[in-house]
Image 1 (tube, rainbow over the protein chains, first blue to last red):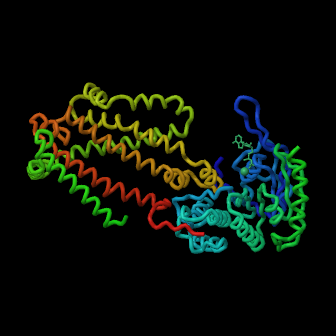
Image 2 (cartoon, rainbow over the protein chains, first blue to last red):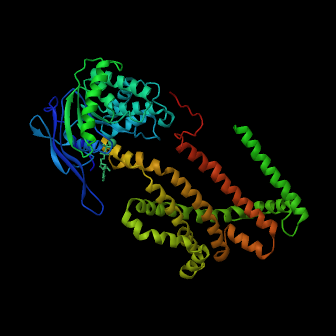
Image 3 (cartoon, rainbow over the protein chains, first blue to last red):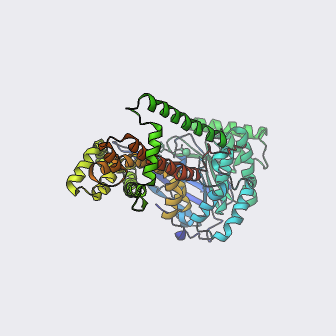
Length: 266
Length: 262
Ligand SMILES: Nc1ncnc2c1ncn2[C@@H]1O[C@H](COP(=O)(O)OP(=O)(O)O)[C@@H](O)[C@H]1O
Ligand SMILES: [Mg+2]
């Protein structure tokens, strides 16, 4: 399914409303016998301006759900609604940060961002300004002419973040973006992400399997079990800015872990 | 190793080869043409007048013409075939066996059959050489197409890349190393087949020169023609392919000036 950029009309009437996913089901045919159910009637609300996390064990269908929202995967059943009307991925203004940076190694850092701008039909006259602005935002303003192969894992993921921001989306999908980074790098990036989220007033849907990460980052989180069923929505309710060593975070994490454990390991 | 050092080692290895050749030519004159005799005949070959000013221009040009025309045809056909095989499982399972069968046909058989079908003229060569080298290109490009990164394609699809961007920014760069590998193997196989065609079927070109001087048992002159063409191939590699390859692959981490930060 190609999403031609010219068909992408972002209906501004519905921005600011909650994006509601209802009864999303996804089956994959299983070679030989029947089918695998990856998503089982998933409901999920992404409130505008919120930092929402989706927590679930590996293989439970988190990436599939993100791909449904982004339009890369067609759901078997279910709807997306916003402000009382059905919407398709093309109606949404989305950015996507994948689990891997997915950069084009043969293009410079700036070239990678320009790739996305060109794909989105952003006029060429705006490219320089956007590249500079978003590389600065992720603290890579000196790396524009460098090649991704010469960057560390953390810096590559920053480029991916800059690329997603550069198309100036309203909602940013992030699929375990820090899971392959070392903890020190990941902590820096989480803090920077929160700063960007607040300053730029973005909406973020963040997938993770790390409860601590979800608690530190989110306003509220969803929990999913291995069968692709969403079993809880919980508010975090801890004031920002948050500190990693705050006992409140550890306590909330312990509570949520208990609940998660009960549902996931039966 | 820096440039000067590398150059030094290159010169040293050529000098050593020449020294061994010189000594070998004196010790076993019936096996190895003497170095001085070879230089003499090389000068004769290079200075003999003929069409295109010099006789050797004409023959070298005819060989190059057949070789490169065949390379262009084979690169295009082989690439299309290889990509089709790498992208379609149906195609892969139906015709992959035939590619291996095609590769197994001895080149000599292809040359002889072309002569019977087409005749003892250059057209046979323009047919036989591409037939021999196309499957090598296809095999290489097939491997490249099989290894295309679907994650990158998905990323490009998400951002809304059109077909042109998908092709030039996502697919071609991933195939580039395979294109270079294909071209190099096609060049080295293609030139041998071109010689075969010229030696057996034609009356011009470097291959024909080999045959003519073979018939006269003139080893030094055969050696001269070999040197001329090998020098030409080295110039193509170091003068064109290697710099181009380096330029296209500039982004690779093993290129000079690697700087991994953080
Ligand atoms: N294209 C596909 N075809 C068949 N099965 C798939 C496909 N994509 C994902 N799956 C299956 O769906 C399940 C959920 O995958 P995924 O959404 O990637 O999980 P998560 O991101 O939570 O680790 C896995 O069991 C996976 O094997
Ligand atoms: Mg995943």
